[in-house]
Length: 268
Image: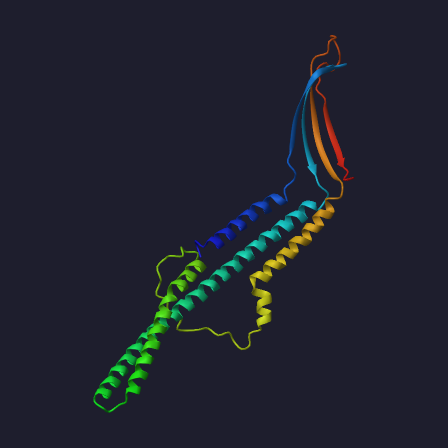
């Protein structure tokens, strides 16, 4: 669970959506500008030399809130997706582990059965030599032993694919050594009174992720609708002005400050 590649990818996606969520509700970047008068404009109080500006754009009311809500729902969807991915990995590993454990147990039982069959074959051979049994009994015992031996070899040949399937499900190298798998002693059976449909609706992380995705899309649609409304830009301009050419001018060299309010009209 700590090192599985699929879960590592899902966790990285969750971390990325956290970062996106923190940025979704932020205002547009603050704009700082500097302008130099290539040809200074001579005014009564002196030549205007350069301009320093600062401005901040503001989208229509509620636009940022809807965008942040959409991003937050996407984040919750990825978290639910991570839980769903974790359950899927557990299910895949559990299934592969059970198959390997069942195969190993079947090999043990088949070996024991083969040993008993060979003992029966030896008993039949001695009885035939003693004249108390027919050769047909010996053939039957030999055929049973051969069938069990073939079955045992077939089961052993299936060990490597079963182990590779387990390693793949667990995110391990395919050629990793075959573990000794064991079957669970106790199997928990759900209560008869369990409402499976209600439990799936409430606790299934895949369905939960889909619900969050639906919420995210709804907020995104609303944010897109609000983005068609006018926006605003507030700004200040500071104009550096040199001294007036004529002496004794009132407010000579005084630097003007301009407050700006712009409306962004989404015509297109």
